Amino acid sequence: MAVQLDDRDLEKSTIRRVSLRLVPFLMVCYFFALLDRVNVGFAALQMNKDLGLSPAVFGLGASLFFVSYFLVEVPSNLALEKYGARRWIARIMITWGIVSASMAFVVGPNSFYVMRFILGAAEAGFFPGVVLFLTYWFPSAYRGRIVAIFMVSIPIASFIGSPMSALLLSMDGILGLKGWQWLFIMEAVPTVVFGVACLFVLTDQPEKANWLSLEQREWLTNRIRADGTKKAASGHMSIWQLLRNRQFLVMAMVCSGASATGTALSIWQPQIVKSFGLTTIQTGFVNSIPYGIASVLMILWGRHSDKTRERRWHTALTLMLIAVGLGTLSLTTGQLASTVLMLSLALIGAYSFKGPFWALSSGWLPASAAAAGLAGINAIANLVGGGAISLVGWIKEATGSYALALLPIVILTALGATSVLMVTRGQAKAVPASAAA
Image: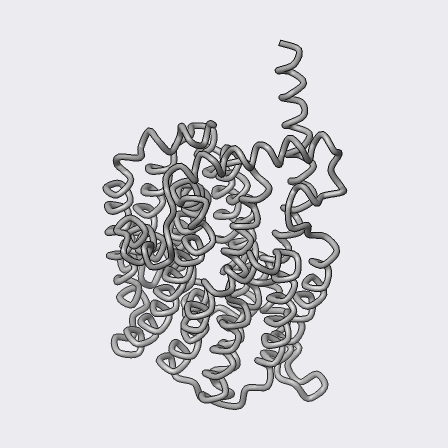
């Protein structure tokens, strides 16, 4: 019994040390990743008029980010395995920070298209790279809550970034620059700084972590290796096998619904909120409300998923919540409070989805296919999310209604909720057992 208690103490101290070292730092990095990705939604409040961008043109330009992101995502994650997370994540952050700052100098639709495309290529691989990196450091039983905590950076980026972006827009005219130009520059600088910091904070593998004791390094290395051995028993999948695998494609489609929701709202929600006649500053603070609520609930949902060792329903129910929130939005037209409530429900679903889903996906994929599989799912989901941005702009311009423009996402998330329950039906008991190993 004494040995078991010692083992539990060693496990707790090791996980605590790793969590404090890696998770807060990676959360800050991801915060700036999301900020640099979605600040174009607030920049649009001034930029679209200055550059003469229509809703359809703006939607297309914003979505081009995800085209190049899709093309580069899997190669980037494979490069991370080859060159090491420390160097590769640093490279990604420094590159996208420089490109994001350069967005301040677009002069029209064509340069807007080009810079958004380059920005997507620069940032590609960061998120799945970090998810893969976390599998090197956390046993499977901890991944639901750790991924959820890490991914709380997504709603926090909009919760903090909305009022911050609105305030930066008020710098209009300083040193001859527009407010939207200051927005791109000021929010890109920290990305480069933290990119350099990656070289000093991150460590590629537990066995190289001199900030852990020898006993902690051995315990963590053996535990991660044991998880990998169990997963390897399920067989090897090449990237081409993944593309022909029904479960992989369904999981990518399921993820696409949540991705389309979060991505489309991050770009269009400031304009939806401002359409009620609010000032830019008021828009910033009101826009942050749904993200603040989602930030708290996604952590609680991820912890509950880990506690119950259940992934399927924790994933499916969040997609149902998105469908209800966006589906009801058309009934709330003209009412700011009810619109914010429905947007909150959709964003709670979109972000609470992430912890259980990525734990489910990383637990299902064999170790040999994890890098390509996680990146592939995320790349397809982001491509669909980017397409949703353009589709919303096109439908809004054609109908004048944001509610109608969001209806395709309602259909996609409802289909995703049904699909995840069907494709994982045979794994309903296997996934919790794996997580508890």
